[in-house]
Image (tube, rainbow, N blue to C red):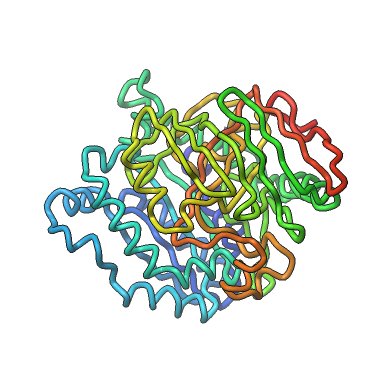
Length: 409
């Protein structure tokens, strides 16, 4: 059996070689919490061994973030350092790749005024809009991986002792990202090939509509005529393959902005901005959210939907079978990186340009003309379950089953 350190080394190698796929002479921009310093250093080592020219590290600290939300004046949340946004843009333009390590406390901002959280999200989203466009059009290679924090582990495994919680979350993460196999890099090549088969099938079908039915959900989503399904790996502008999310179990595309109608109900909690939104539903008419409910986190959901005009519409539709590794682990991670890969999901906000033909080279205005939504935010939430059925409707009006009882037909 491999030791914990050996698993950690494999995980770091996976993030560098499969996630961002660092190329010789390339700069890696690493965003990481200070609590993940040991893992971050393994990333740095692997990156230089892969030939990186430089590794630029952006450290962050959740404790300091909470102190700011508690004590800073309101105006602090309406500003975002433009030098930082410009720095990310310049590094992207020079061909850097971008890796984020997340280690979120799901209740970091519990009790904080939602207006402050919303103002900070708007300021950040507006300042980083150009960089986000680089991400959504695959101009650069980018990826996200996760490591446990004490607070996150306690939320996921409240029934375990404090000493057991973090190791249990590590083990759940190792399983989800396929580190617990002999050759994770090869395992990911095989996994991506399996996702590619689903992508090829759906791109041949070119469904005009998707019809969702489940308890609390009766939703119709129209797809643009030139939509593309993608999944697993992507390819950057410099023709470098990468995997944006580790783990990933989804295939996804874009909805037509004004083509969403009906009601959809969440099936897992959404951790947004350090606050949990639970048991919520959205009602759509001609693509726009016209009503919403939430058992927990109503004000946070309201602020999310009202981020800008585009946050009233959807930007992504993703298919994930209920019978999949993360779902079968039967764990609620309270972290979208994992929970979205255990469940069918959709996203409020911006669309990915690479999900329509020729989209990578389109301007913001051209994307909008093709029916894609644009926004300064993009937030996935989970809607899948063992009770979900999905039909695809062809241009001729024929309805065909895609999912039955939560799984591919």
